[in-house]
Image (cartoon, rainbow, N blue to C red):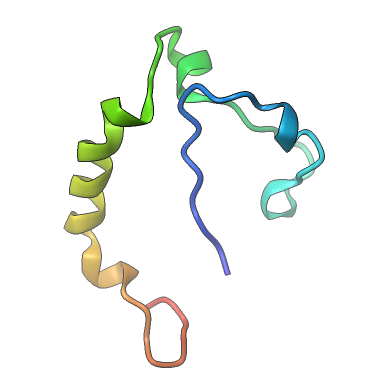
Length: 68
């Protein structure tokens, strides 16, 4: 299974031992580090919900548990 993580401005130290999706030559970052702005979850939650709703059918699980 896969999920999603949206790092806004959190401390990345706890993620130092995690190899996301088994990709060994990539790390993690935050939206704040990438943009140079202080981005908090409250700043983006409405947009995230909007985008998930646009693609809701593709995100619904089947009875077997696999994503469609």
